[in-house]
Length: 256
Image 1 (tube, one colour):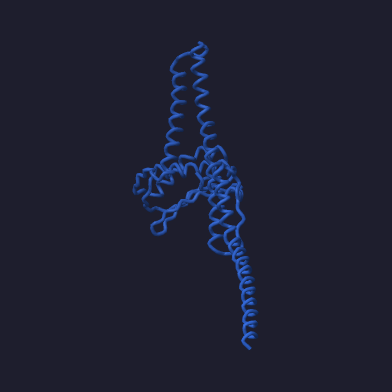
Image 2: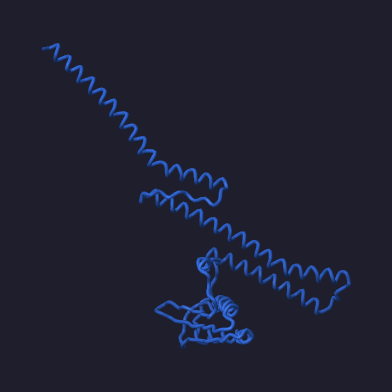
């Protein structure tokens, strides 16, 4: 009986050892599979960061199917890459635009000065007036760049004043009357008398740009300027009867 018991115990021990060994390998395989499943998105993110740091552009990682933090992190990375690429494209375009804007007055000044040096153009008040006009244009362009830099950094100084909105908008419309008549556009003003606090100079600049664009694309048609105040919010509206913005340009309306 003792021998039989020992034999049975040995069999149970072997069976338990084999079962434990099989369970160990199964558990190790399952753990490795789960670990790879969990760490693969992290590895992809790490590789993506390295590739982006190395200069690769147009990089978009596959978003994990699971709705967890890894999916959110991957989507944030893709959004960050897209945002940085848009910023880089905008800066390249801005540098090209600045170079184009500066090239024109510089070319005019160069030709005028060279003509004066060669004796082709007389050095008189008219010539000096033309040069002065080009210098002033360059000065305005430099001021625009400085304003853009201040606005981007949040340091643009605002001179807040209490303004009669109806008088302000009427003055805006009056300044565009001649140009509107030249392009066959009817100007309409829809405001009531009330006061509001804002920077009239910068607001004039904003509305001037909007009205300029409206006149360019609404001809022939109607351009309407209106203002409305609700609680502490003042809203200006510039509406025109032109073709409107294409869908692909809507996301770029408020870019610098």
